[in-house]
Length: 88
Image (cartoon, rainbow, N blue to C red):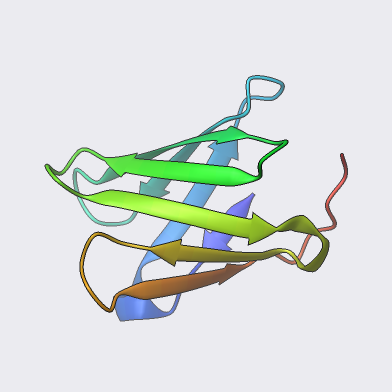
């Protein structure tokens, strides 16, 4: 999985080790590592960073492959689109 954003040129790469369903998200900003845990039944992702107090909640509907990420900072909403089909 590769997720790219156009927000301040930040590129996010998601690598996964299935079937553990643990995702690690790396950014191109030094020292920023994101860990994503998921339960595929609920399709709810929790992203925690190594920066104190920064918690990201990711919700998705797999058929349309749209991920919505909201942060602990008011008004900051990120939407990620994946161009790959979802295969259960």
